[in-house]
Length: 301
Image (cartoon, rainbow, N blue to C red; front, side):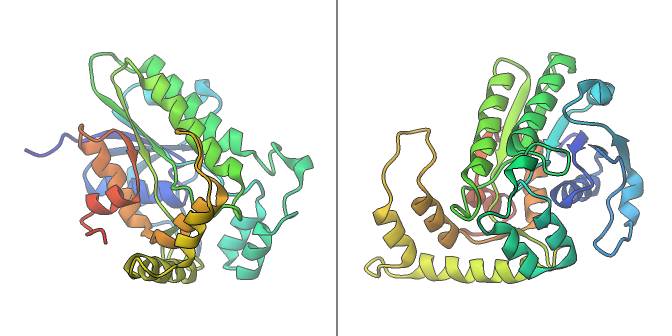
């Protein structure tokens, strides 16, 4: 029996991940809407507007201001939150758009962030975008949705990769958002799902991601295929890492080991896994990279 068509709202549907979710949902015949600060349709890196964007309802709204989108939420059966930042500086996003590898590397170097600009419009904080936008939308959805009918809230989180190059607060705010959403949805008809991809690449929409994806795939293959008696860099890092109480983030050494061992994931596979998690009522909670790959038909090594 075919799954019922969903009425989906994507928070940030004109972004990198959000646009892929919109495409995947439209391919399933779903009713798709998006909210973003600009309200503009998705454009490719070359400035083109694909034909599929005509089938999405694009709305201007702020995730932190419920009155701007409350009426849009009422008839939606599923929400996907895709808004977030990797660094608290706009420099890295500009470098990605320009395909500027040098600028991207510079954005990750210590001292590249100006703490005086933290939380400003030019440089929003991890707390604001990664956590607070998600919690605000989820709370509003809980308050306006009709009771007695199943609903789904999907939060695009992340595997704990890249530390210490990526600041700890990035993944901390992602985990805080997961915990907050879980509490908001407890005892309601909302099923919460937390998608945790690894490095997301797309050779056409984000060409600069391809070299990094190739390196990560090679690293993952070497580390995962190496005989257990060989002290690979990731195994050495795990041996040096210290144990943490359950519920706490592992130390940077273990996170770096994970970075070496986990392969990248294609953008379209992430979007497909998100839609499949909405379709399957048995899926809830954390969906890590291994499960993402399983959902889209990959055999995990």
